[in-house]
Image (cartoon, one colour):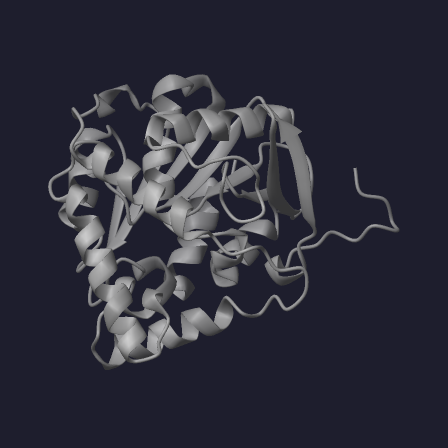
Length: 285
């Protein structure tokens, strides 16, 4: 419980950083929003650390919900080694969540995080109450394994223009996309103190291997996901093709799907002013 001397932090830029030890790993995480009830745990994307969440998505949710962001094993300031399978990443996430003492969570996931969330819910369905899947795809999804080539190509393009790779990977290269990409990258810099450690090249490469393995794997039975599920993406996702969001929607009974026209992998960030209120409503108990 918060006392009068401990005001509730609802700005991700000011969220306190913590660590917790579990299974021989020190997990780095941040918390914000009012404690109590079911927390919303954020599962982050490929190559990302705690510093890669858009505050325009997190802050509106944290206004009335307990929000937790975390680095999985071997990422950023978390210790250990990144495993080479999505399923192993899901088990690490489960270890972290249980170490915090939570019996039930809502999940907000993006990209790689959405794959980890699907693997977690398959193994531990009782843990998850509501599920948000953005910019992601199912196991065995068409062309997911090609993400490695797309990623390296856009990292090179970004380097040649001295830009952040996310501007190429997440956003269209039209005028609106370029503007949205630069604004997104600027928002990620709003936290100036106590920033996270960057991901290592080895960790990033291992994550890519895990995504390739997921893409080439045997499709999962998504009809087993009975939790309320919100799916969102842009209509031109080059990293995890947009058709895979439609595939998830078809296969998860009762799921909701939002596709933002004129946007890419980072559609929810480009249209944060539209998406954040929808996410808040969906996640409201």
